[in-house]
Length: 125
Image (cartoon, rainbow, N blue to C red; front, side):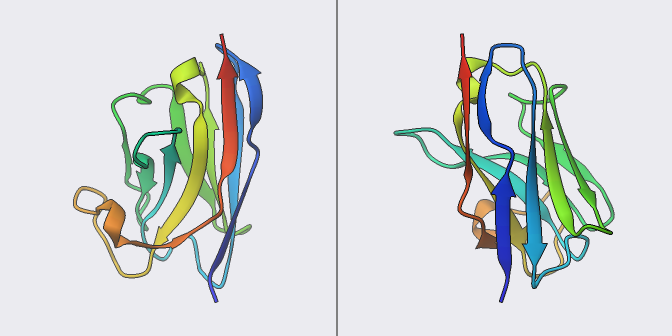
C-alpha cells in the first residue's frame, strides 16, 4: 500500500522560506514522476513542480526561480524548497506520485494515482 506523508508546512512572512518533505512508503520515489500540487480555498488544485525518474524537472511559471523540487533516494523522500514566498503561495500543498513510467512534459494531474493528505502553507504580508 502506497503512503505519502507531507510535512514542513507552516506560517511565514512574505519573503520567507519553507522546505516541504514527502516521505514515501510502498513506493520508490525514483521510480516514476512525483510532484507537488497546491490548492487554495475556492480554487482548483494546481501543479507546482514535477520531477521525473531521471531527474528532469518542470515548474509552474508562478514558482520558477523560487521553488526547487528534489528527492533523496536513500531516504525515499521528496522535497520542495520554497524561497521568496508570497501571500499568493498560501495553500494546502500535496505530494503525489505516478504509478507508471511517465514523461515530465506529458504528465497530467489525472495521471497521479497516489496522493498525500497535504500540509498547509500560509504566507502573511
